[in-house]
Image (cartoon, rainbow, N blue to C red; front, side, top):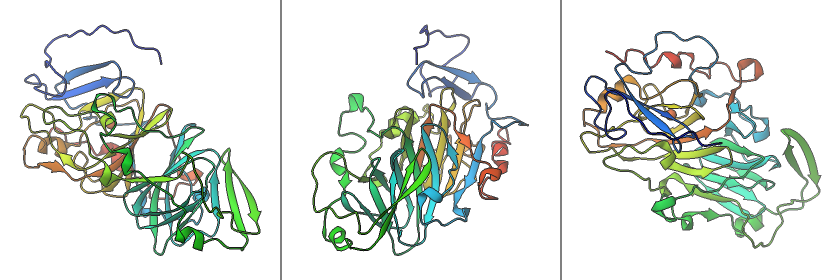
Length: 381
Ligand SMILES: [Fe+2]
């Protein structure tokens, strides 16, 4: 994207720095941001909350989904209806009740699976990788894989369509910040992997251009005895993430980037202390992220900036409206009663607009919380 014309100016009453020491009579700072908080930006000081709308009509609206009510338990991820999708990524919520009886291969792109509930084993071309709640499993494009589990597991699936995941540029904080790449655990050829090799018939479901083909082998094709190289399935747990923070400045969500793809980014919000400076903002600032759609999957804890949002829910904020903290959270942020957040959430920001699957297209009934657009009301109370 071409850079915007740069000409920093100020007009009227404004603070000297972003997210701190707001002018009297205008408690609501809104950041108008280009390029997902990396690019040009202006901070506008409002008298009223930018989320204080009284009526909303039309398809471009904030949405929330309660995925814990998702009724479909599929043995193959390829059978699960995406919740949101575009040309660069698709998002699914997958509950698996028992071990998979077939192998999958995603020819469309890298597959990221965030483990919301349960534990199990990933068996793939590169060996065995045991996983548990809070792990990100990154499966390279083209990998043969299946999951074995004793009890039900839930996974939030993110596909990087026709592209790959990499790690964010860590800039001036250096390569060991956020998480040390030495904390990454890779699949291994081990006793569990060798023990699952058999001469039975196995089907491979290949997803290519979002369509399925099935390849049958008269033996288990996960039959490797070794490998070397730098393409491999891997995992990292949110507990290995050591978040960037400042006691005097509320960092933008981009500081919490975990994986980046060409046209979207995956961020992880993990527990961290609130800003302690009396003049510093302690909740996400009101913002118009003009070039990105924002999706958050809520995994664990209490979500300090959102009312009526619980683990297992997903919110979708398309570009085109200003969003920010809910009324109670904004009010509490000035009370100093909370020392830290205990939330764990996965955020996806997409450069291209996401398309929400409708109930006519297969979204299960009663998953969407249609009252979400009204959940910012009573801000002035
Ligand atoms: Fe946002």
